[in-house]
Image (cartoon, rainbow, N blue to C red; front, side, top):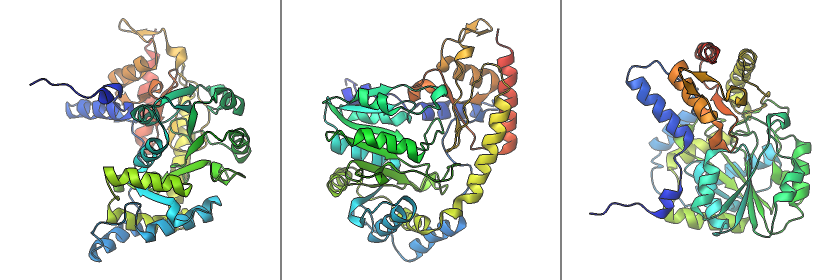
Amino acid sequence: MEKHTSDLLNRLSESATLAMARMARELKASGVDIISLSLGEPDFDTPSVLKQSGIDSINANETHYTPVPGTQRVREAISKKFQRDNGLAYNADQIVVSTGAKQSLANVILSLVNPGDEVILPAPFWVSYVELVKVAGGIPVILPTSIQEDYKIHPDAIEAAITAKTRLMIYSSPCNPSGSVYTQKETAEIAAVLRKHDNMYTISDEIYELINFTPKHASLAAEPGMMERVITVNGVSKGFAMTGWRLGYIGAPKWIADACTKIQGQFTSAPCSIAQAAAATAVESDPSISQSMVSAFLRRRNAMHASLSKVPGINLNLPMGAFYLFPDVSDLFGKSFKGKRLENSDDVAMFLIEEAHVATVSGAAFGTPECIRISYAAADEVLEEAVRRIHVAIGQLA
């Protein structure tokens, strides 16, 4: 029989982070001592109280289908969390819980974007943004930033990119991959531009909200006049070390929440009932439940930043959130090792995994091809050894 896949599938690229993680696993399985700093997953276990909540849910036989947008309990808990932490008055019927924030993003994009619509993506951006826009038939409009700007987009650049075809902008703060955090002042300046354009909406991806080293997280929807223009995406994966529970959510204007419920009803229906119970307990908890993990990430950031700053050819900003470093490695382009010349960040990432046995991710996948992403979600001694290997390997370049 003839074997061919759909045009849609052929338009998509494999997730660069998952591809590098797969390569690291394969090398490790073959006996190579690989340090993997490629995936965005906390190396901490889910807090015991949240695990117990899931166990209690099972014992209470909460193991049946729930409403597509989630149980009333979890949606009311998220509504209260938005009010408590973000100053956002989303009602429970404006909340949709999904199988991870990735599905939340997909639901919104598929609900709002038609083929030919333009979607503004300040770079660097999370790898799946572009691919999800492609699924909807949208046109990604990538706006570059630089390390000199702390990888933050200037409002004037957003203004210049908006056209009659612009339907959506997607950005994250704290940002994956750069770790950059928009201040309240910067968020207000972006809002001032967006308020002038009634033809577009913005997804504010706040999944790293709790892993934030600044005094206060700023939500775009909290700016005056923005509640009806913004879809706020969040979840429990990063801030509560619950990646395997697969629970994300949105707060949105009700008509968008209803649209996302309709989309989700045809793809997956509701997420796992047990995960919903544990997620409700998570968002009901005081955010200080994550403080020990966040403190560890801050300590690691400081140590990694100090040590990597000493490696020739690696230029760093000081990320204020998430758990990534996003160094500009363009000074290494043109250098060679064993006759192989490094032309771009893809080559640098391959060089590091092959010669230093450290897995990172090329910045090209994040729309910033002069960089690589390094996760510091690993034990202190592992990170120290990774930096040592990187330093030695780069020292061999000519």
